[in-house]
Amino acid sequence: MNVTIARLIYPDAPSGSLSGYCSICGDYGDTHYHRNDLLTPTSANLTSIFDFHHPHVCRFCSSIWREPKKYHRAILATPEQVLFPVISNESATEERPTWGRAIRALRRDVPRVMILTTDPKKRVWPFARISQGPTAWIYVHDPSRGLSQNVTIDLDWQLAALGLIEQAYDAGFSKPAIEQSLYSSHKQVQAVGIQATSILERDLAAIRGSAEFITALIMAQKTERASTT
Ligand SMILES: [Zn+2]
Image 1 (tube, rainbow, N blue to C red):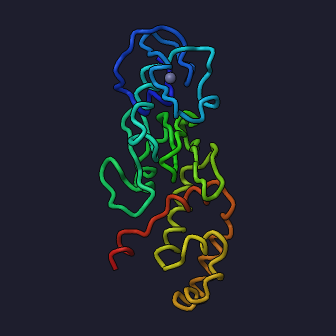
Image 2 (cartoon, rainbow, N blue to C red):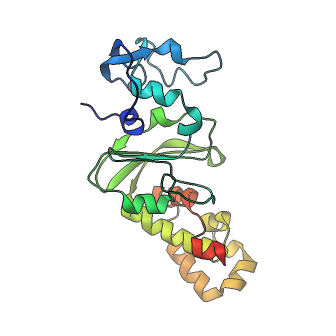
C-alpha cells in the first residue's frame, strides 16, 4: 500500500466505488469518488490542485476536501496519529499540542507530513510532501511573509531554534525584534540587560535566514512559565 499525504492525514476515510487514478494525489485505487462531487462553483485554485485528465479523487483526498474547517490548519500526521499543533497562544490539548512538544515526541523513523499555516482560508495540504528520518519537509503557508512553499528542516536544529526564540520571546522581545535584531527594541534591551541581550542576539544572528529559524519563529509561543507570570 502506498503511503500518501492524504492517507496519513485521513486514514479512516470511507470508501467510494470508482476505479482509477486520484486527480489530486495520483494514487491508483478502486475506492474513489467523482471529482465533480467535491467541487462547488466557488472552489478556488483548482488548476494547481487537480490533474483534470482524471475524473476521480481517492477516498482520502475526498474526505479531507470535505472538511475544510478541520484540515485548513497546522497538521502533523504520522501512521500513528494525526495532530493539529497550535500556532497561537490558545491552550494546548492532546490533539492540539504545541509544535515544540509535537516535534520532540515525533519518532524520526516513521513517515510524516507536516503543514504550518497561518491562513485557514487556503487549502494547502495537497502541496505537502512526505518525509522520514532526521530531516523533514514542512509546507509553510504564511501570507504575511509572502511564504507558501515546502522547505526542509533538520528536526533537532528546529527544536534548538524554537528553544532560543522562545527564550527571547519569554524575555519580552517581540517577534519582529527577534526576526530583525533584538537591538531594535531599546526599551526591552534595557529591561533584559545589555549582556544577556548580546548573548541572545549573537545566537539568533547565527541562525536567522535558515528554514529552521523562520518556521520556528512562526511556531513560537510564550512558554507556560512565562505567560503565567
Ligand atoms: Zn488522493
